[in-house]
Length: 458
Image (cartoon, rainbow, N blue to C red):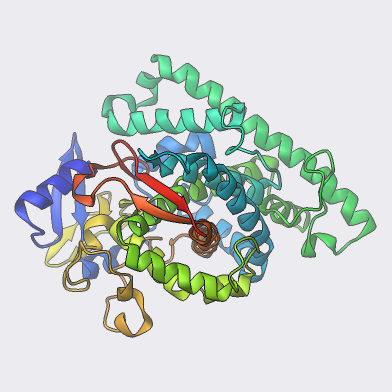
């Protein structure tokens, strides 16, 4: 759908930012105008995710991403404190540690003059970070990409994508008769068994700690040497266990759903964002040098030292670059809602039951808010330049009551990773932007990946 709509936009222009299409017997409203987007996303009633999200439910159940309104309200209220900025500070060392694993792995590409696909490295780094912060357990995906868990994660994502692209595979009663179904079930068993085993281990650790240090879990969790061999920071799973032991009705299945949701929601999206910012910095040496000078000044010229939470916060121009990258290439190019109530927008009456699709990629290219929209210009996001921008003209993490709960987590992770790479390497992109062929699946991608070359900084 993304490729078709984007192609039509190139041929016929933006039009009014409001279009109707049919997919089989299902009506879809496509919206790419900020005032219309606000009507949908700001509504406290129309928070049901679109039907396409149902394909994720065998994997992540009805966690925060896919749950219906009543359950979502209860879970969102329960989970919001686990994403408090003070708790996110616990994850910074994991971000830093895995960022420097990436820096070391990239050394293999120093002599590669043809360039390499940075999305592969970004994807495995992001998976390492999200699994360790979610479950308190490093899976070493970047160093051991052939592990059973990593392969199952990759394969089930491919199968879900195929079902999204081929509408005849969406009904379960048809999908069950395909070869992909058996592979889908095998991957689910691996992913779920791994999550349940981690829940069991962390619960035992949690209870042992509670007996000896009743307040320890609220501060940090000491890891079992069998798992990591070193002291660990608090994991998202530990926070869920604390909620379940503190009178909240969270079963092991509930916890597994939210852990898997956290991993799914924070893996491909962040990996995509990391890939695009690496590529875009490689297309503009001036912007890249400005980013390096900012980071180098904050870190005192030290390439190896891990930045603190406060130092990551000081990287304001890098933050502008990340925001501009997400404007041009939002990780999620389309968002959908199934309308629970009818809505009147721009003179159009949209009945309940309609699928409203927010075309984020097109929305972010509205010249009313982003002049010369195809230009990579991080200065757009300097504080003085965004004062008159519509609040729903830029929504890389969605917006309104059902926005992304993990957006601060993602922003910190991206800063840590990019600052480590830029401190150590100069980046040069291989392909021109106009030669890239975009397509949207679960996230924004390009055919053939995003190739870059690197040189070590002296």
